Length: 298
Image (cartoon, rainbow, N blue to C red; front, side, top):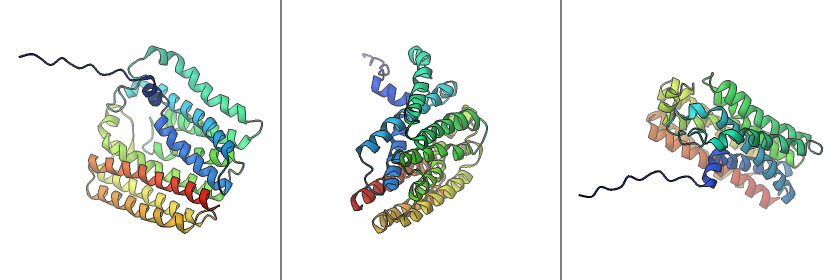
């Protein structure tokens, strides 16, 4: 009987490699938050030039920070099933040599480019990179159970870079959205960490779900889920939002909390991954509604 030939893994395309190296899935979410911050700060459509500034500067800086995260964690990535096939983890010589220079330029160049005419934007772009690379990746992630709690501030900086791009970084709505992102991040990430608890244990990374029981982790997640939903509801008081934002966000919040309660009742990897997906949908609903309501009603 003829044997079926062994299939070799397909070599990833250049686009797939770049998507992983620069964490473009994460970057797209950060940019979505930046755009929502720009809409809130502008009290309406922020203009194409404002959006272009958000996408170019924020996209480059966040991509560079994401690349530095992988440069620093390449050795640990090899020990985790979820990350073992990342380009640096498998030892791609081209990217190991050139990525540090490219990633640094992607952070520094947009900051220096906007510094002469928009210092607030330069500050928040720099803060996002410093928090994610320096405070989260280098300092807290290898040492603290609550690493992602502070790491979530990088997402908050992205929102405020969006409001800064349109000249009003301290807008109350943008600040409230930054707080929402800060509270949302642990709920989102710890849900995924329950699913991949063994990976974090194997890599000796003190992620909270890897160092406590699933039940305890589910309760910690609930605290942040509840805080996120509360911040999203409070945001409806912003002058640019209102009932068209409040009603669907309130209903989405009930769904989000219910899924977290289900995780508390059944703290399994499957239920945690379901909550992880719901957290993505929830934030997308909040950000999309902000852009639609502010953009169409103002």
